[in-house]
Length: 66
Image 1 (cartoon, rainbow, N blue to C red):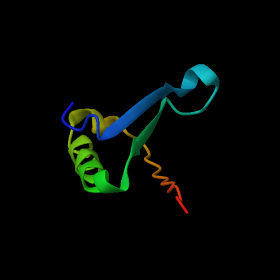
Image 2: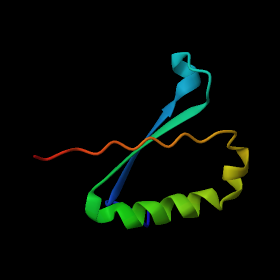
Image 3: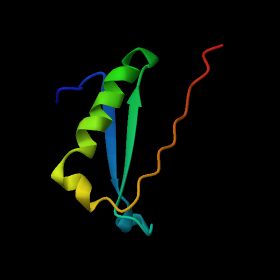
C-alpha cells in the first residue's frame, strides 16, 4: 500500500492459462516514480515469500512520448 498509487500492479495466475510458471506480475509506474519502484522491488526481495521465487525475469518497457 505504501507505493500506491505511484505503482500499479496486475497479478496473473499463469498456470490457469497453461504457462509453466505460477505467477506473472506486471507493474506500471511513471519515470518520476522509478526510484520508488526500485525501493518496492528491494522490499519485496527481502520478504519470506521471495524465498519461494525460483526465477525472476525483469523486462522493462519504456514508452517514447515523442
